[in-house]
Amino acid sequence: MKLLRSVSPVLLAVCLGAGLASAQSVYFGVGTTQLSSNGQTIDTFGTGNPFSTPSMTGAFGKVGGDLMITPHFGVGAETDFRFSQGAYAGLTYRPVFYDFNAIYTPVRPSRRIVPEFQGGLGAVNTRFFYSSQFCDPFAGCSNNNQFVEGSNHFQVHMAAGLRFYVTPHFFVKPQVDAHYVNNFFQFGSNWVPEYSASIGWRFGER
Image (cartoon, rainbow, N blue to C red; front, side, top):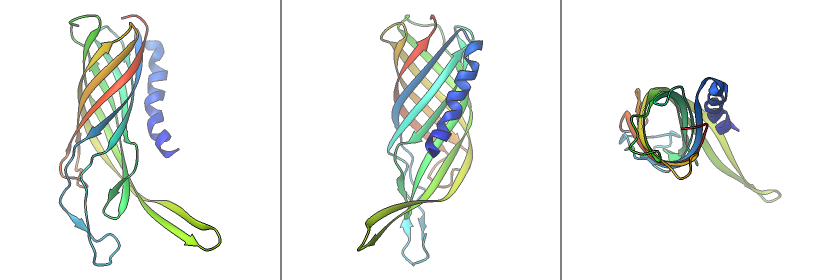
């Protein structure tokens, strides 16, 4: 449910603006990031046994949509989220990137291949959890995943992709994103590269 609340603003923005645009599309995809560790060690539980901080990798989901106001200019919104929680210095974490963008599609080399460039603003929410297991002889073992705290950072987003239209409405889109996250001290750089591939559906004529 927490993840759905993070994704829902993107879908809401697309639905509210649908009546203003000449064409709309929605897409869903998978991808990954490659971000190094900050190299720190943290004594999370005060036991004298510090944990190393990780790099950011793993499988990410992507949900997005756009409203093309003219054949070449439009607006859109995206959310990128790690599918599963990753290990972070004795805790687990899940980052969610969300952004609102201007979209530019230059002259097309063909009707089936459409370049796309995005640029916009957003934020990153990183939530930390403590996972534990409790066992007793009567009820057996149960797992507990408790939210500890969250961290929010402003981000600038840029992306370039290519839409390959399999049909006049169904497309496949590989995309490269660059997220510049202000003061992203939990990891080794403020720049977060992302590589993804999505499938989508365009409503309206091209």
